[in-house]
Amino acid sequence: MVILLLPLVAAILFGDCLYRRTHPDDGQERIYAFVIKSAPKPTAKCERYEAQILPRGQVWLYVLRDSTRTMPAFGDTVVARTHIDSYKRMKSAFVARYNLRPAPHSEPLQSRLYARLAAAGLEGDELATVGALTLGYKEDLNPDLKRHFQASGAAHVLAVSGLHTGILYALLLWVLTLGGRVKPRYENRAGRIAISALIIAVLWAYARLTGMTPSVVRAVLMITLVEIGRMCYRNSLSFNTIASAAVLILLVRPSDLWSVSFQLSFAATFAIVFFAREAEWKLHRKEWRNTWYGRLFSWTAGTVIISIAAQLGTLPVTMFYFGQISNYFLLTNLIVLPLAALLVPCGLATIALGGSWPGLMAGRITGTMAWLMNHSVGWIESLPGSTTQVSIGPGMVAVYYAMFLLFCFFFTKKD
Image (cartoon, rainbow, N blue to C red):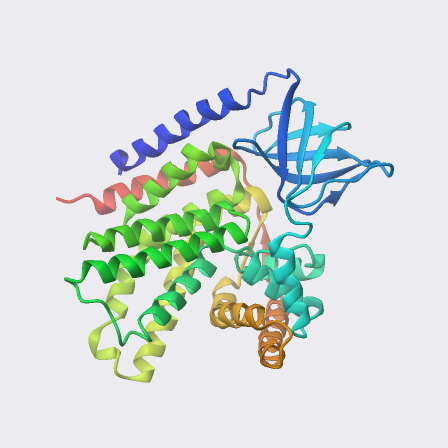
């Protein structure tokens, strides 16, 4: 376990040095180029954007509101002389005068695809939920709906993450193998490479579409490593896969180390692989696969085990950043996860069909499922004692994970 963590520590230190050399935060003014990665969020006198510093790095960009000039939009590049303020979790910069380079397209692809959902008849909270689930477009989510998802323990569903990537991955495997009936022979290397290469290309295109968030990049990178392992006839789903994905991400974007999404994503994945891998294997016993009740029990037990494992892995991060935990997360996952597994492919089909009459039918089905999901999380949030307010400091987070790693080390240590 200690050897496993050494590359990750090296990536953190080396990546941070590269980031500091590229973007020094010594308080000196320099000319920076910022690529806008989000819609504006109004503050007292500024518009706040999530932006990327070229060539790499994430920052909150505060642009002084000015009615006499064009404000930046998604995809635009802002060139300005400013300095970067360094904080623990996210760097920030303020600009009043700048040069604006418009994006190649007047409207980003994400917004155009979101408009296709609206053309298929989706509207209101259902449109916002489907847009967040399939495209990572969360601009139209109202605060009450966000609160329902957070309090019920379903906030991870709204943020495109490993769950959505895994659903898309399973869908791609199902389509490319015609429901599992056509598989390339083990000796047919060309067939295996062709399928794996196509899956990797589609998933990275999806990650680019949804904004390259740390959770999506982590999931796609892990699947990429798994598929490369399959090309070489090896099973690469292990702790080494998780560590390799973390190392590669931090070498390219070391600032992601302070991202809540990065921390939650890797904490949950590590805990799931450690606690649930053995249990999941035992639940998929051969004699259970031929009966509907065996498959139902296997799926239900697997969902419970994965939910508990993810909760154990992310509990201190959740308490530190959000100050609350959901008491009904098991109930939430049993209801929301099946709906999400249906909503993602239905939402993608609705986007592809648009405003045509098949698209309107798909939109009606998708909207019904989104309505059911929204009302389910609202009902769970309204239950008595749905949340517990607990806040801890960074010291307690460190103690928790130190004990967690020691437990993992001694539990996996062979006699």
